[in-house]
Image 1 (cartoon, one colour):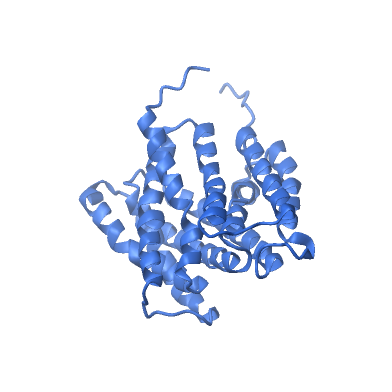
Image 2 (cartoon, rainbow, N blue to C red):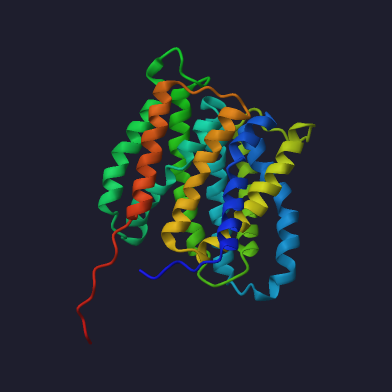
Length: 303
């Protein structure tokens, strides 16, 4: 294997992007807003920022109308993911909520089989029961030292969010067939997220369109750090990195989120939940290392 000659600056840029998005669950908790209020405003506040980044490069954005519509549709799916993710944070905390959200790594493999007929790897089949067992441990099994207002519900919401995020990833991948400035597809997806949040607001009794302080200060910070800059840094960095290095870089997100939740917010997870975190992260790391889908069979057709 040839040595990796990727410039250090690219790794640093990716690490900054991952660090930014790892604050997402902490900022949700600090905002103290309802799940769908957070979803709507993190998208709404990010739109002007993304427009400013995209406009100077819009002449290079040659995506078709179909691809742009697909990106908006991916954003609608993302609004479902974020609503469930934010609700999971309310139920089980910022640290564990972000760990659960990263189960999408496995769900993408199985969703890709349904959509593209990509065969999940042996590692994916091994990791699946491991991470699901870890999710069960996060519920705390009813122990009194379990962290979270409703840990069982939080686990269910987190798993649902991971499934929805897997759907978003597959749709967003299809929306990026034509090369374009990263801000273009992300802007369209953010339009879809804001629109989806408005519709889903009917199911959120706490949905509030009236900004208040300091709640919306945290939401503005989230829109800048996570929805705009963080995702753009990662989106522009991953294609330049070796596949395995990029995958493990993303794995830093739940680890850092766990650090922020336990240190900045004082979330004291129980030993049982700690076992669950270890199982989930080890399962995700294993499937990241080995790959989530099997490589295509070599063709012997010489014609």
